[in-house]
Length: 172
Image 1 (tube, helix red, strand yellow):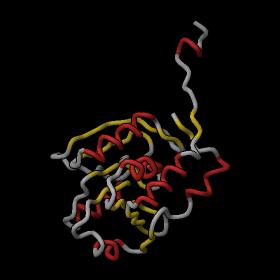
Image 2 (cartoon, helix red, strand yellow; image 1 turned 90 degrees about the horizontal axis):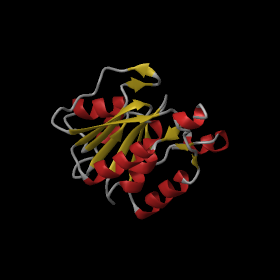
Image 3 (cartoon, helix red, strand yellow; image 1 turned 60 degrees about the horizontal axis):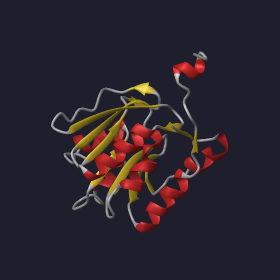
Image 4 (cartoon, helix red, strand yellow; image 1 turned 90 degrees about the vertical axis):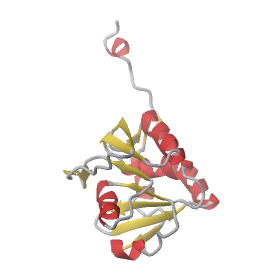
């Protein structure tokens, strides 16, 4: 499990890609591209536009409020747990699997906001990742070698923490 310490959170407030203030602006950049999405609203907007993402990561919430489920039943479904402000090994592994197996939805129990970092690390070059920037719009991240390097740099901001076992907690 990796946690993003408070001292690094400001790095994640800036868009990791190009910010668009309307979803319609983004659509013109998608033809011919492999598209991955992070977030329920972005994924739902892609589906409404008739452009389903090849990979979607959703958590059933937007801005911490329940959001009607995004459902792509014909896709492979992966269910992982992930807390706010962190990245579990399950989520990191799921992004790697999904990036190589298009037609996958990663359903996160918890929060998916930071999943863009490992997804960018694992996405093939040329992939476009879309995610929401709260209160501002949609971010389009084109995966280039430089963006993969930036994702790896951001990933190093997370600190690995161990989760104690029940035996450790109760000294059994």
